[in-house]
Image (tube, rainbow, N blue to C red; front, side):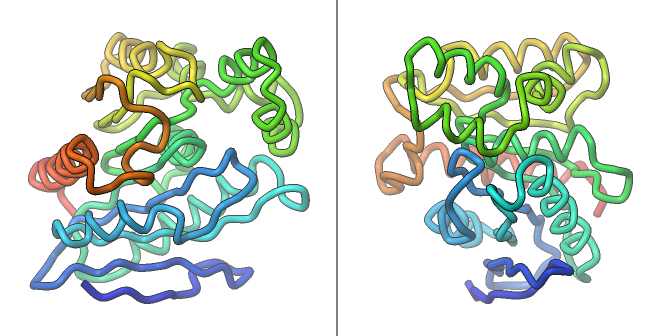
Length: 252
């Protein structure tokens, strides 16, 4: 595996590239980190990104603009820029998206609203905030001040949370995501208990292809917090297998 940082953005933002060994073309993903939309950097998912590169997937982990200077939707524009950059590189297979937590929300939103030339072939989401409005109301009920502060920093209001919610976009019939894998622990206290299952059901009803992998007793961030645990290794293998399976049926 070769790791390098490259500029990808008109403002000079960097992305970390994890390049697999061996001949290509390799399937590729734009990997969007979590951090409640407000913190974190391109190294945040290094354990997951590196493991996928070892499994033959080229991974691009971009830096994104953040509040207070750059609230919603600046980072979505950055993700679309990263997708376009990656799709323009020679010698790659199909390009998909990968996201964790708020990064899962953002990459799914980019997949649902790609603006044409940034369309993704597939998406893998780990413990994604797929309904930010529902998560906001959960945080209000629990008086979870850190989560509330993050919502207030990135989103202008509740109407924007609903408009930019993948759950609501699919339920409204506006778009259906590309083939999707959802990774979710059943003991995730950062999300409503049914968020992933409800999104999967809504997508299937809309004609989407969604695979949901539940990991009993696992919480938020379980792969990145303990990548060597048996469940983490199984989840990483599931993500890699999903990506390679999509690459086998999707033209580059």
